[in-house]
Length: 316
Image (cartoon, rainbow, N blue to C red; front, side, top):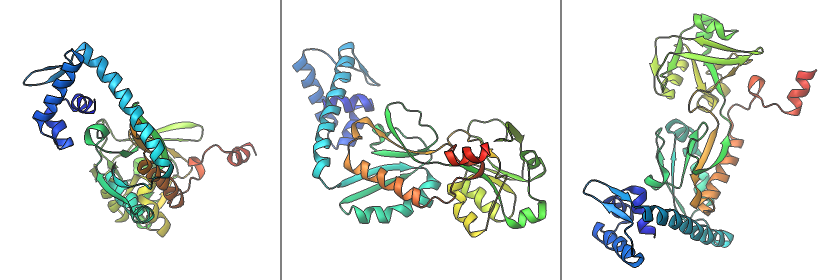
């Protein structure tokens, strides 16, 4: 069953063999033996692709459910007493991984010495099953409904500039003031123009911005802002320490910056068949606590949630 579902998931005997460290011919023989045992053809094979038969589709769905139940039963028992061990494979966004996850890892691995971490930094949304990853950290609402999702932290976006730049060019008081500033920008992932959106004062503000630097990398924007080139729109997790040190100043604090694309809260996502894995559970729990204690810019002003205290202030 496991070999068959792996072949279907990857669409290839050779790729399944590579990931499972088995000969392609061995996997092919075992899948053929399974078909002989059942007395039906599960896969139609050609030189270019594999396709499930009607019987194969039914068997694949039921086999996946059975294998998931077995895995969950095993993990449920093991997690009661077993120390998390083995290799934990995770993918994380490049900048967030470098600035925060990498910093959290020494403490995590010291707490769980029998774990080994295999960490991939990438801004591409990989297929966890195909890539063999246990979990991924992603920004914004996850699109894959087949994954279990847990929020790790909020991720407010803010407008920042260096004290030198703001002294030279002035401090914008309203979003519309940005039209008179050098706005260094990240290239839109979906194409289109450079427009920043804000909420505040009871309405939505959409401002077309321009500047002399466009990039696909937030660390380039951070460096340019630190150098006094202009104002930048960045995640608070990217510039938190710069705000604390005074190297950058936040502007337009009374306005909420609308997230665009993959700019929402920070989530951990992992496949259903690993939701009871001890190694995944302890890592996610650790990150939630670590990020809460290392939040560089606690929510305030327009970013604060509608809690009782804020509601009371607004009512007053």
